[in-house]
Length: 90
Image (cartoon, rainbow, N blue to C red; front, side):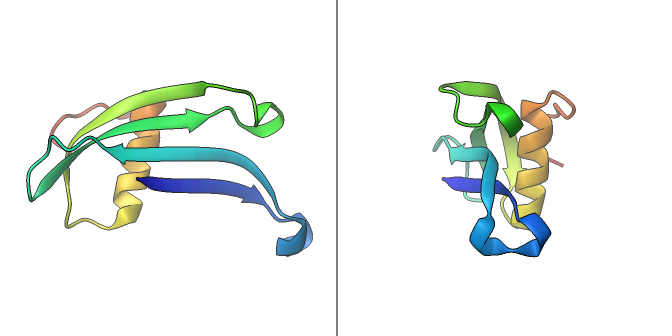
């Protein structure tokens, strides 16, 4: 599972950091050696961070594994936010 945490660092001070969102990207095991399928879950965020349950979710299909993990995060966020829904994973 890939976990992406979004944090606020007041005035750039990590010691005062506060998590305001979490994105969980879970490989569902149904992909191939070259392409993966993932379930995506976004936490409640901002002032609602910490609320139980999932705020938004989605499914990313056929993601090319050789791409940067930043591509995976970008597509995972877009799928969960319903702005990118292509099964090709391109």
